[in-house]
Length: 405
Ligand SMILES: Cc1ncc(COP(=O)(O)O)c(C=O)c1O
Image (cartoon, rainbow, N blue to C red; front, side, top):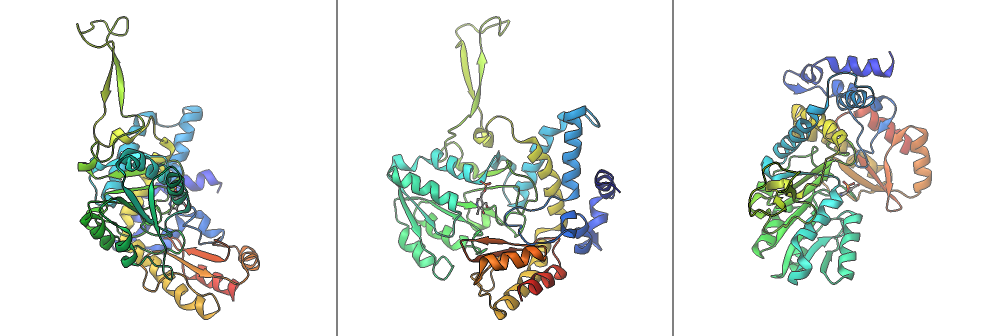
């Protein structure tokens, strides 16, 4: 069967029938939805998650239409894909659809948030920590050089200590920014406690959720998260260049001003319009309200189409089930890797699918893993990051442990 026929065949079965058994996910069937799972033991999901056949098929249909007008006229559905993906994401994090804008990148959204809050002008400060993503920290260092008061809290034994946050936050703090799950070691921040401190000082909380949306339950209301962003190429199982920016409804336009492109122009003169309004401005600007004020131009429709499928898939599996499946793998890694000489830098009992271990000889370790067709990430010199997703199984772990032994 060639690849194209495989993709078509794989997706003719309804999603639920393919992946659910007695209403619960059948993770061995889920594995079949990710053909890359057959090629290697792929544990680099925190860098980039493979596509499922469902998202891939939707993308193929899009390409077929764009190149040859083959298939359904896809163009009427692109806006639907954008809207449905936004709604499905809102549901995933317990936000309202009116709180979600599409975006291109997590890091770009955080930067747009900072521009929209204009913290520099207010003389306020931002508190973040060293387990946040490096590109976000570059942004803060750049703004610090331009005069913004930025406080970077250092981790203690790979955990952000709440007492350090308490010390850093004061009445001038406008924003506390964090990666809800750290890309460094998978550490899940105690965002509820951090948010309580921030809110008590009149500050807001931004959470970068790219390393956890789709992998662990997120409830922005219960967790006290005011702003969040992620793109879709990790745990949302989509592609790069498309993602979501959550802005609490009551803060839109007031605390966070749109800074890029928040409306459209109308012409009030002939020949643009046949009946100009007397006394009206020749060229007027009509502002957009709602989350659209943070959106610029067209989204990546490729991104929206892939995300529409993958978010349906994630909802069908259920995030609690996804997390429980990953836990069955990470629990074993936490137990077995330190015992064979790889100390963990992920705290015990941490509830994310990412764990990281220190290795003695990174080059040799990567060589062994590559030869065994096991994919992990080696970051920050000697830190091996292993990230388990829905298609991974215990045989993948066996292969990893055998290669590392
Ligand atoms: C925690 C975290 N934030 C942000 C990013 C980058 O996201 P984006 O490409 O959507 O800007 C990454 C990528 O690895 C990440 O791990």
